[in-house]
Length: 270
Length: 270
Image 1 (cartoon, rainbow over the protein chains, first blue to last red):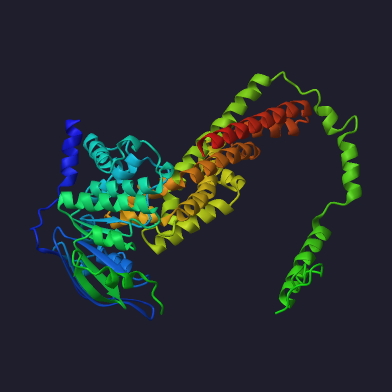
Image 2 (image 1 turned 135 degrees about the horizontal axis):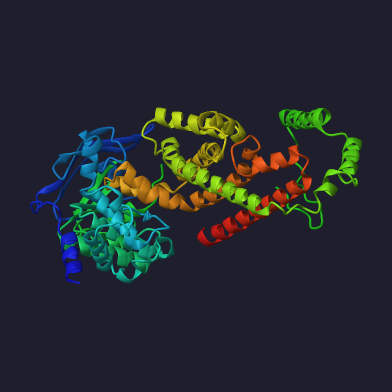
């Protein structure tokens, strides 16, 4: 039990100590096009360490594209991204892999391996810092890794479901396992792309509450996209709005005007 | 727009009109079938006469019964050898098919040239008949079951390699992207996300391979590559039709047993 608690404590710590309030993300002049369609058009954004920033915008405003650009799952056309002290736009091969391992991503779709247990899926998170057969399956994993993965599952309230297959879990439980996998990664920054989408309102709120609570508890920086106004206000410190590929709103969550925010939740007509 | 009068015939044609190209395609297909029958179909009177000869008092069928059980122990031993050849060749083929299938898979192969070469190799293994491989390996290792095992192995690399590659390509891309986003290695992604997701298809292909190998291993004996096929050929060459009947009945029982067992395993595992 003590070992599990120690593992949990380890996964609560960022791998390197980022100085508080220093910017962990500096985006300047970021542009991205799909064919002739300009999705991002000169984005400038700075995010301080330990803060929770909600990214809002109508469908097709470029929120998910921005998030994917940050970890280079989508290649930007122009601009510079400095994330966790590294110029992301210049990274290649193993350097890019090492950088990605420092950033936890929670997707709208949980992206778990369906036939494997929740425990095995969480153990996959260790591939951010280790490789080899002992990271592929829970039965091959080192004892410390197994304990840490179990502690991560307990942190999201799913300890008893550790042996359950991922495809037998509910949508909310699957998203929690995805969060546990992200914790297993021991990230320094968390990107979340609509983790509350496709979940019923109550479960979506629980997932957002869990994600926000855990990142705050661990002192991690969170950049989250949500299409629910109440979640955006409740689970962030700062709200950044995207419109026509640019940042058109930047407010503290406490002072944001709900009517003003509501404009960012409509469907874009183009 | 006019509303349909109740009881009036439905104004939707039962068959869609064919275009000129579609007409020509159908006519060509019909011509091909007629042409093939004209060239290769057996004459009906010839078939009837042949059947009469087959079931005549001095015909093949009557000479086969009762089956000769005097050499049952040797036949059973050779049947076991046939099964061993099939299992060994199939196991070797499946093990070697997996890495080749990974190299041949779109999205998993390290380089397009490697993918094209691997696909080419799989195509060669698949298209050359196993009897030809058996003759090749008889030249390499001499007469006997070793040549049969190698022939089955190569045939199964071709058969399973193609289906393994297709199964891996069809798996959900989400879990792969999730692991790529945390910096997992290519091997880590393949063994953690792709292979577990493709496992039901792998199991089905492997069991079909085993069934195919058992049936194929009997024919391999006809060219001298070991197994009970050799005894079957000798029995026919020496006009020992009652001995041949024993062998055929035992082959039938073996194939049925393997098919039943593989069907049962398939239902249990998939």
